[in-house]
Length: 312
Image (cartoon, rainbow, N blue to C red):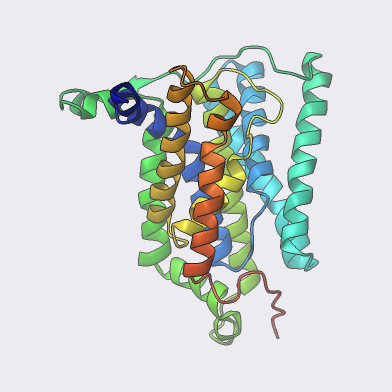
């Protein structure tokens, strides 16, 4: 029993949870911007997957992983733009369009992987981002083991989450985004171009999700594999809901899910006499439970999922 408790609450487990939080928190913040503007973004999964693939593609052909990171953000943004055209311009059902986008991303990346590298399983190994050390953090006990040496995208994630919170709640643009998702008619009356706000928010959500995908393929690993996102887009959507459509809340919820994921990995190595498949279910089971509770208690943006036609 002591071994189990020690494994669960060890610094190594917490450090692993921080690393796994990065793609979830970035995508969850993307979901926050999209849904604060009134667009339900089920397509986060496909945007993460597209970003992961584009990141490896950029690093493979240029040898520079940072170009891969840039392409990942662009790929996620382009997928989001496609999603936005269908949902905003043509008023397609948000959920159906998002699921279709996820299927498109899975099929396209698998096909392109076979065309480019002759493999359906994984890409060749490419140059990744590696880890960097921050001198100030490395000199602080405990913190040095958690954040002293991490992928640059981990530090970037914390910066972007804080910047996203400031943008959403402390700037006029953030007020327009929130107003569009709550009362688009009132926003339209005040002269706010609700469609432009929604396009901006959805494309931003795709770029952030693409960065999350880049972390998977260039931060954690140095290659792309089929279905690399592995449901993280749906977990990010749950984290966004549980976090009350707030970047900081989404970060906290993402860490909770990631900590559970890190725990299940540690438990698999303890030979507990429980099938690994059952242990692997823990983070997804927690996601379902948390999402069910969050849906009951939370209040989403009032116009979320609705189609509004401006009178202009």
